[in-house]
Length: 440
Ligand code: 5CA
Image 1 (spheres, helix red, strand yellow):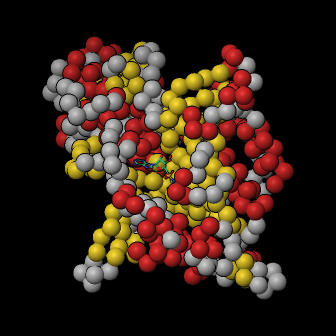
Image 2 (tube, helix red, strand yellow):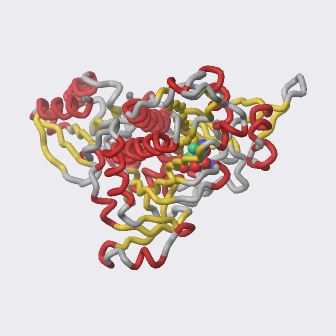
Image 3 (cartoon, protein in one colour):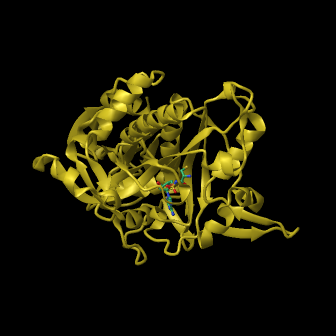
């Protein structure tokens, strides 16, 4: 994308309405604009990050055997009356009446709808297990939407739902999802610590929250630092084998981790002092196993092995995709701006032309840019160098490819790594090889 013609409205000043770093940086880097309280429009740079996150989530869900669907945002109140949650959900649910006076709502979550669809399709226990997920907008009329997309009213969520024959198989599915989540967050370039959690209005007994450490987090957290050192992408688990899943889960849960709501001082005291970490965390995911709560209340059964009705055991699995954009920034920035992990960056690198209009500078920049115009941002504006450097740091591109008149004449490109600040001088071939590597 050419910056001179792009819709990337960066701001020099800190917007007054933003109280936390990520909200400030998302506004300043031109990623979002608010349209109503807790409701945001995503501009090109923001949308790219949102979609990059969603795609990593999608790949790991697919790899774990979940199948993607897309359900509507509008739901009929009838569904929620069947589960009994229509009255329980309270003012967080945005209720709407259509022209025929039918009660509708903007979905805050989809347990009821997916259970109903499952019931229409699956008739026999032989078709179990099933894991379905979607990545879709949700609406919760939060009393205090704040911190930008961190706690919005409209937000983008990956919500998955599983249906199993019995408790043992439902627990296998839960553990498989746990591993998929750990892998997902690691690929997103952040550490999200799984913690035993309260189940709240979703219901059930087995539940974990995934928290990214940040001083602005809403929950207090206590955990064993050994959890930060695990490489979940290298974890050898045979996800088709119950014993292997159990071994992984037992190992993972052997490390202490709890939010303040679930904190156990006695168990905490047993964690070696040099590994005790206390702080605050942002909840970016939440998984639940709640048995037959919805299949029973909505009377959705399949025929069991003996021909009698069997109510599948369910779980649900959420990831706050839009919240993650902010959470990653909270965990990865410095005083100059965002530092995107490579995997989610809106642009893999920015090409900075230090002398726009200089024939050699322009030619070299065009040569680099032309190899990967979608992955690269080309700062071809008639701005001074200082402004270009400041915007590049603010927007957080992992690499800066800097082309000035002297370098252009000698066929050299200065390459800066945004995270380490390290600068090297590369030949044109070296710069092209880096671009090819970043794209791959
Ligand atoms: N049905 C279950 C799982 S599919 C569910 O709704 N779980 S949840 O309530 O925990 O939400 C899942 C994730 O969505 C949360 O972990 C959080 O990361 C994100 N989330 C929840 N509320 C908001 C909000 N108001 N703004 C942004 N993200 C949110």
